[in-house]
Image (cartoon, rainbow, N blue to C red; front, side, top):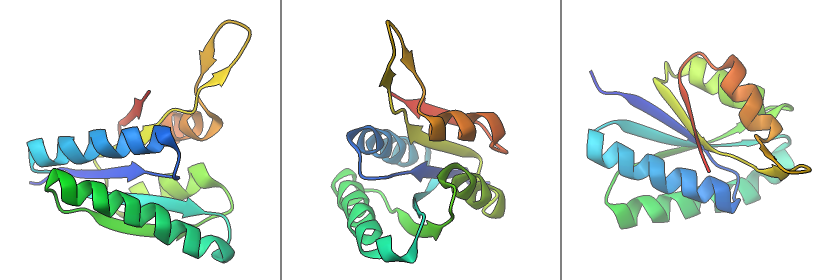
Length: 126
């Protein structure tokens, strides 16, 4: 059975690193992969298409097929989790948004919520 990966992207440099990692992992393992961009409003649909087009370009360069999907949910982490549940995803891969604290780095709130509540393993790329 083919492993199903979901890579969450948002156009940030952290998400691009996660996408590159996930796409290479999919190529090496033979897994199927979907890039997901969760938006909070239909107004952001054009931005979402641009983000997903960037992922498709990266996938083409790596030589792997990648499905893309835009999903609307008022809570981004919940959108990622719902898509993982609906798609029977085996693993979520996403970027970490480092927030500089006094002397430490913390996971971004979306990455933390997905890590806590996802129905499958989550790999956070720094």
